[in-house]
Length: 138
Image 1 (cartoon, rainbow, N blue to C red):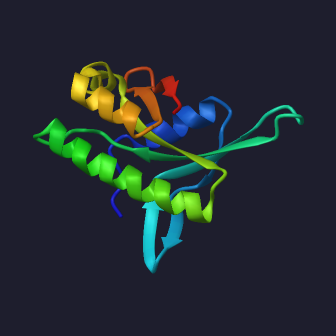
Image 2: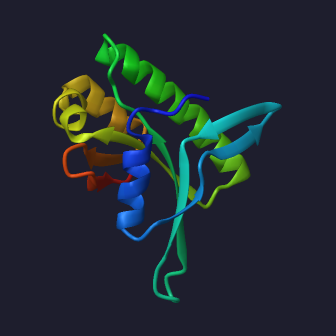
């Protein structure tokens, strides 16, 4: 499966925040299907909090239509979330998008409503600083 243009940037940004990337990609098997989520990572917190596990699907939204890119991203997110709920239920899924897409397209009323209603967790990364700027967990 082809990697997204900003795959390495997001991986590096996660590692800079103390995450340990454990899978690149995270391969899931569900109902005879082989699925590949871009990244999986873990971060160890204080002993009383345990370990947090995430999976990240990176999207660049560089196609001719942001709406078509969103259809694709949301469809993948939904399938991956369902597969994770069955095979790796402790892992939280995030959709990674850059700040420009998040600040413009993801703020449009219909898109924002869908993200909220469908409980899509978003990781926002900045292309220029190569850092994660925001986590929205639903």
